Image 1: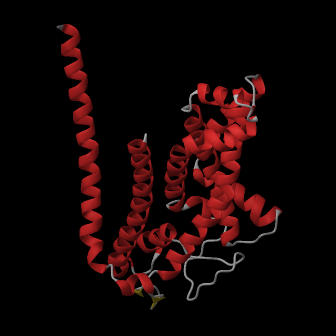
Image 2 (image 1 turned 90 degrees about the vertical axis):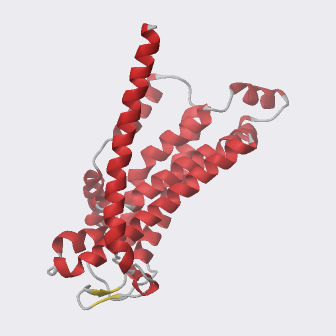
Image 3 (image 1 turned 90 degrees about the horizontal axis):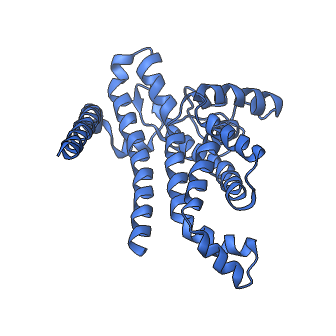
Length: 281
């Protein structure tokens, strides 16, 4: 009886905590969407900002965010997945492996502003890439690496060792086992972790603050060595640094709606991949 009462109490506390979090999230989303949704239109999404960013749209910021995410993906995903495969499939338990894993976990907890300063020192100055979308994308790639490595390694750990042993017993090499058996089975978990990590990276401001993001650009280019606009930094400037904050407040809320919608779509894709994988299993 006492154990059952404790279970009910714990369940009630968890339910209340979940309700509080959901209520706060709902209030925040309601406030943003109620004030910004009316300003979102095709003109707002497809036009350049005009009149000192008091009118017009956010097309350069959208293009810059997409380019930034693409560079981050091309840099972080291959290195992160390869590192996780080595740690889980090839490396043997040792002090060095434990140090590597501990370092990866610690890198996950470093504030994003530190990555921005490191990207400034490494990519902008040392490698002389300048303040550009390439420098910013590589910096975000470094920030994303620990999360991709961790989520990929966890996905690989979910594959039973019996499947590896059975494939090896049939004469396949370890590389063929990983390529044809392990990775396909872990693909949904890997993609879920990658997409969630990239959705987080797309909303970062601090890492790109010193590496290439610009306050205002009246034109956009696909060149990788140019400065760029991004949605999170554009939102930050409209909300805190603009000379006419009250006038551009509706545009700031509308930018927040677009950014939240972009992150929500990426998360929805991740959940769909996970759901589809579970139904197939």
